[in-house]
Length: 336
Image 1 (cartoon, one colour):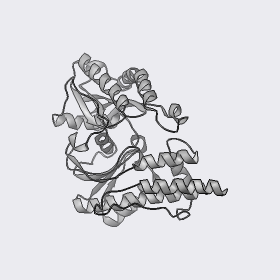
Image 2: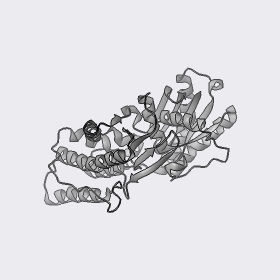
Image 3: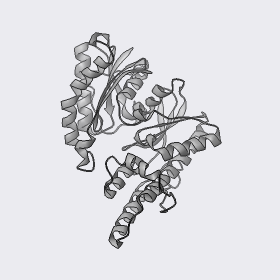
């Protein structure tokens, strides 16, 4: 089954063709990072307009790169939630038009479900059930993946997402946007004990997390150093920040995995590319005996291949949409 997949939930326009949920025939991504860097973050209206300009040509390229004709496509899958509402609407409306014109089924895909499915591309032997840590600019959640389409959140952030904190701290430091990559590179040569930073806890909800305190403490540290004329040890700060984030994420996903008893842990989302988190999870799983599944770095960020992968399993479960499909800024992962 050849699925044309569309992703436009934030600032990356993406199209891909995926066969039978596991084989990526093509994957095209048009990044807007350079355009948004000047603002220090994504400007929703600019992102939406750029999606409109790019999406049609990118979909054509994805089909061409896959070596297929339009007549060889079997369905169209699209991210319909969650995300920047204007951006998501662009993808949804294009996908509806494409599916209608080609006479193909339309498959709605939850963005976070797509991130989880990126692991199926990298690990052909991975099958549910497993526990997945989903960490990105907009999501930080521990998900119980009971089947390809049955999922529920076991725990998550009560405030800021981990990726959002990386971006905001990096913006204040002036080291680039998005912040995850620059922070990770600096941390490679830094002392993670240089600056003690808080790890949030949520009383009575041991699998939940909080990153607002870490963000506030980090920004105060940066501003206080500037006001005192002190030179901040950037590598040391980046390493200390990365350690604090990892110390919040890793113990909780390990606790969730122990509770679930599946013996399998996956990681998904843009922050899954962070080397400190990957290393800490590998060490924790070596101690616990759980199998760890990490997506390839190219599938950690937003892409359409993951949407096509999950779209296949949604279609298998009978989850298709009509021409009244709408876009949603927020949507529970259990809804699909």
